[in-house]
Each structure stands twice: as structure tokens, then as C-alpha cells.
Length: 65
Image (cartoon, rainbow, N blue to C red; front, side, top):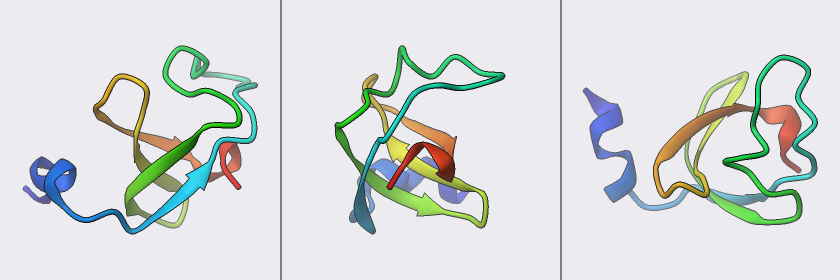
């Protein structure tokens, strides 16, 4: 259960959110355009970052630079 330790792990890199205009999902309440976020894990399609709530969230890479 690797995901339980993500908050305690070192940050892989930081990314900047470039937009919150989602077609299907509401992300504007947990991401802010222009703000930098710590990446804790990454897959081919998603970045798992510490969002505005202070928890880990998985978001499409299209939201970030």
C-alpha cells in the first residue's frame, strides 16, 4: 500500500498549474492556476500532487507545465 506513504516521501519535482478548465471534472476548487505543486508520484497519464487541501490528488498531466 505504497500510496499511504506519499505525503512522507521526498518530492520528485515541482510543477506549475497552467489552467483549471476541465471538461468533465471540477478541479478549480483544489488547484489554482499559476501556483506550483509538489509531485509525489507520476504515471504515464497522471501526476499525484499535494493540492490546495493538503492531501494527495491525482490529476491529468494536461493541467501542468
